[in-house]
Length: 359
Image (cartoon, rainbow, N blue to C red; front, side):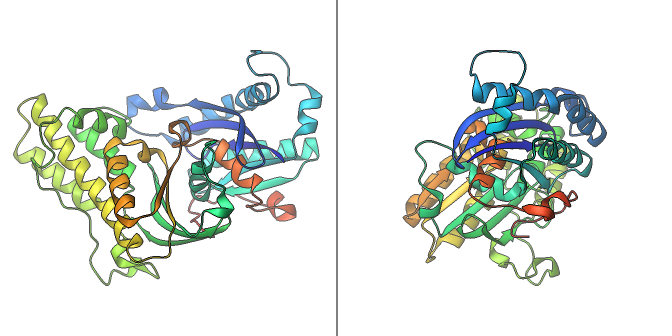
């Protein structure tokens, strides 16, 4: 099965062609980071306008790369379109004004080609990204697994028996981990995007414990917990506030002190994530921990999750670096596994900015 995937949930215009859910024939991403850097974060209006301008060209490039690798420009041949079996697209969660661009493009393309449309949950697709590597195990042979999706917009722990079966068992109650990194980088004057900046600066620090930051445990009985496990939920708002007060009361004297503060802040986030993974794995039925999302590129987080899974005796599955952030290969791949909204319901889909895994 050959699926064309389209992704425009935030600030990446992406398209990909994936065969049988795992073999990536092409993956093209136009990053808007330079457009948003002057503002220190994603500006929805700029993001949606850029998607409108770029998505057509990105789709064309993905098709050319899939069927005639290295050929460069030129038209997308009719016989290539005929080989596509379905068009898959992210319909949520994300920025409404960004999602609508990709969803509209996918619906129009599916109608024009006479191909099925598949609506894909962006969070669930991040978990599938770990199976896009040639060396990765078969998805249907891996479960049950614990999933951690950690990105700029999402931080959640997911129980999954198999592709298409997802249940959130813990999540952030406020800022996502990536958002916490972005806000800290802005306070420290490190620029945008904040996650890579803090990761880079923290590696220069002489120590990781120069500042004692809180590790984000929400108060028991918080009504926002719902049916989730309290010990698997996290709050990063207090961490951000602690950094703000630390910088106000004790401004860093030099770059070395900035590095130590960044390292301590990063360690607080990483430990909050790692500790919850360890809790969920302890005495569980899980055979693997699958980790997706842009923050999973963080080197310190990868170190700690290797330690956690080794202690628990389970397999650690992490996406290739090119598939950690938002991409369309994970969208097409998950659709190729038979997951997603299909049929007439797919053509009636509207964007779902607040969609959660398992919905």
